[in-house]
Image (cartoon, rainbow, N blue to C red; front, side, top):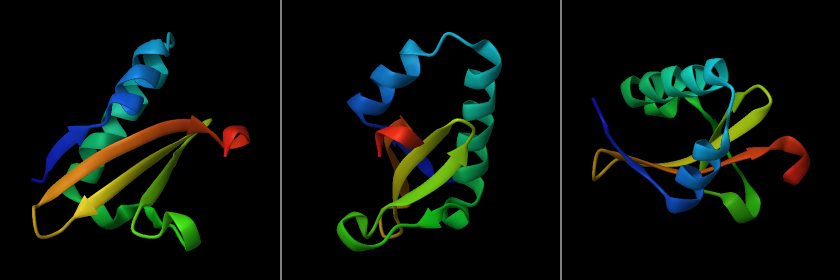
Length: 82
């Protein structure tokens, strides 16, 4: 399983979520990504090198570093904020 690191922006937004079911859903998706890091959609243009996974109503942005066997979770944002 791949190691996971959480950016401060991700931690801040995750801690503000009050809905326990949504938090559980996000945690389950993070566990799935740790088993299959390339499951997210690869981004293009200025965000090349990052991947996203849609967790309604949010997008989970992350970087998978193959050489370090590491996933860095960058941000959790609403589609309207993109």
